[in-house]
Image 1 (cartoon, rainbow, N blue to C red):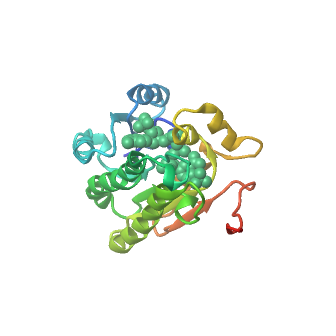
Image 2: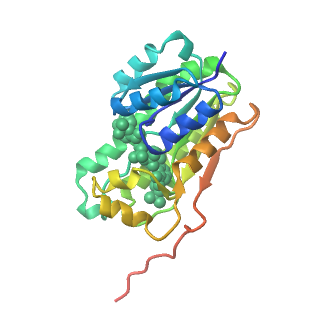
Image 3: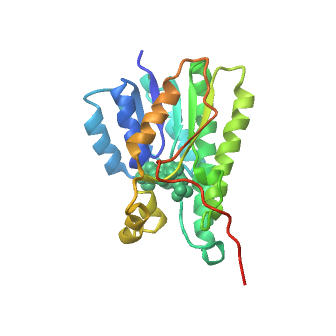
Length: 252
Ligand code: NDP
Ligand code: 8X3
């Protein structure tokens, strides 16, 4: 039987590239996201190669997440890998000028959404047993603070610690858990963070060499395809032209 991967946020960026990478490796795909037209396009592209099931889903809605999992067709129920990728940053401004709604949206998506999907998929992953995997997409922002990172970075710190704690609970089950923490990658991420301002998004990547969605998809597939006795706990990856900076000091 084909291996099944369940991907959140498959309509863009890392999620879409990951769908293509797993299709190349012959996995059956469950593709989710809020934009149905994009899911349909991706299904049309990939279903000549592998079985594809799509479901329009907002991960913030726990009941909807459970309903999508409950309604998985029989062939797509043996989920072996969950890619918890759906997420976003909003408001690159300093905390003191951010709307509370933006903080809530990041918490609801990056934390509550990821937890909703993990809880709903765990029974199927446990059934799949050794070799199954949960690949959570964190961020360098979960480890390294920077101005304007506020709730986004904090939400990704949650992803890291949740991943580690899950590992502890799942140790006897053979289900692996990984926190992948990418640095700068050119996707729709900055367009979303800047609320549709294309010029501001382009500025983020101007004059440097960011990672691509395909770079991260390659890492996600690598982690999920490792031999069943191996677990990558955290995989932090940056483009070579990105690194840390010095401490900020306020001077008179
Ligand atoms: P994109 O904006 O290109 O993709 C984000 C995806 O998340 C889209 O498919 C979007 O689908 C989905 N999504 C957002 N909100 C929801 C929701 N409420 N319910 C379901 N799906 C949702 O960005 P990336 O591919 O770059 O981001 C993917 C992940 O990688 C995110 O978790 C992000 O935080 C993380 N990341 C990104 C980095 C980067 O530099 N690009 C670096 C480090 C981490 P739709 O709108 O159709 O629902
Ligand atoms: C996104 C990467 O560098 O914008 O998680 O925080 S960064």
